[in-house]
Image (cartoon, rainbow, N blue to C red):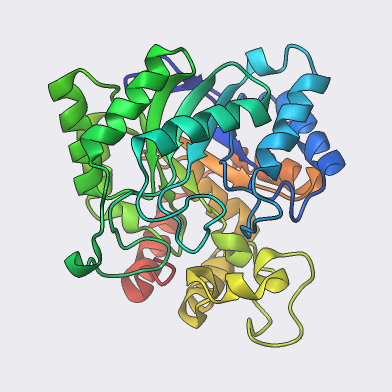
Length: 353
């Protein structure tokens, strides 16, 4: 597995990144550490987390994921030096007052959140510090349309970059990135950084999978031309693209145990729980089977080997799931399969946008 450079930074990462948002809710600390052990053993050098994790977000579990990772670092001397560690500062509250009080996200909020993450992670520096979602109003997490009437921004992009610059200068952060961003946001962060000598974003972390390819609608060109690397999250569409929900009704009583959509009613009410998303997923999953692959293999291979994706973030709840996802790296999709995937997308579009 060849390492990939992130943007204009000197960060070199594996094209598979271990996502950790299940740690602290679906996955206990012992099992989380076993997953981290196996990931490191398998050669994965990239871990992504966030201050607001675990997910689903609650006041009780906020910060648990970073704490689990920090405890693992403490138990495994030398592990931290082998890894590129990414975490995220939460944007405005979005119904989570335990993370961010009031409106917006101030420069001081960014500084305070970074210090808290460093303590929980038991490390001196964060390799990649990302803004989890925009401070301004943006249609993300299943929202469809931009509404200027809802824009209540209190901290400009320039001010956010100035706060991030303080962290870089203090040696607390090496590089910065974005998440759940738009073409406008990426352009503006890069433009202002270059104009004012502030940290240039190296990455964007957005959803990308067979049932949500909104990144392919202009963001791919934006990031390519500006040399901002894409980190793809939810490559399996919260489990829809594993096939485990193919024979059930997401609103019914017979959902498979363990999966996020099955376990949490709040997840079924989000974009991944839309009936149209399941209809599309079933078509992709059958295409995989018709071509001698498991749905998981095809869905991950699509992201793993996509020209526009630098690293794919996989979220797992067991070592067995991790091994399955890692094994899918060797799966290659034929031109005919890729053509069939595009045909389904033309018909179904992006139901989990």
